[in-house]
Length: 189
Picture 1 (cartoon, rainbow, N blue to C red):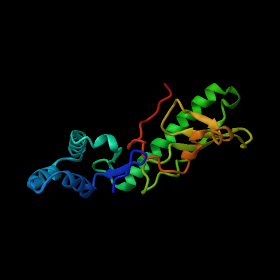
Picture 2: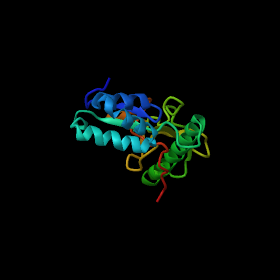
Picture 3: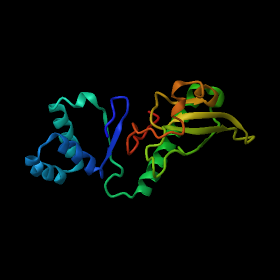
Picture 4: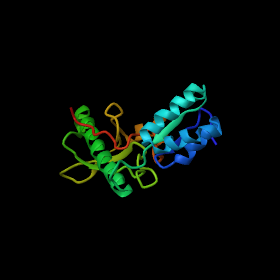
């Protein structure tokens, strides 16, 4: 059921059965009361306890676990997806503005951002990248196509041709589960 360190097994808020299986594997039947108390804990408390138990048993070094909360409290899946898309699009625009500051030949061009199309109901984190077009305001033609990070100012934006040569270009159109929910909002300053 669990994989070695190279793989990441995700435990969502509703995957209590998986956590219960971990505990019952290492605890005898006399500790069934402890398992029931465990199931009554909040998800964040369950996570801490799992790490403590596995660490105490020397198991934690064999595995890497990733915990994903599928939806922040009080929001539907659709609302989470829409919020993630909104933040990702705004972040890519921030990075495009920073790109324009560094590349004066594009300064003043209209910024047309796409959403991170990999953000959807099955992947609320997306891939961390969005396509942006810089459009000449007078002529209406695209003067540059960029790939912009939706999560990092240090990654910023690159011309699509440069982006395609980077090792991280393989992240495009994937589900990057290392990204936070909700995404952090980037600012110009």
